[in-house]
Length: 89
Image (cartoon, rainbow, N blue to C red):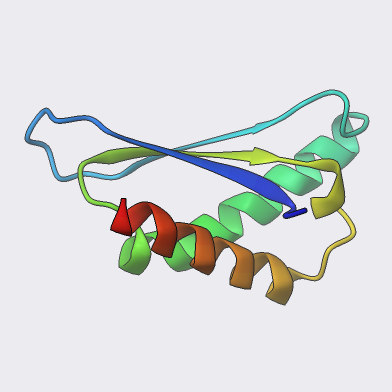
């Protein structure tokens, strides 16, 4: 199971800007844990979205419990794979 879920929806408003949102449920942990997970998601998005994101779409990363202890390189590989799948769709 990946450390996050990626949702993507094209806006269809003619604007090519990519938007990104982050969310981590209280089920994942306390505020310290959730904020750590959001920081990791922000770093991943800043690194990969400019080149692999879908222009003119909203992207949402939902952090999961398994993403907290997961290695950053593994999360990066998972996001690269997920962005490849949504770009084809």
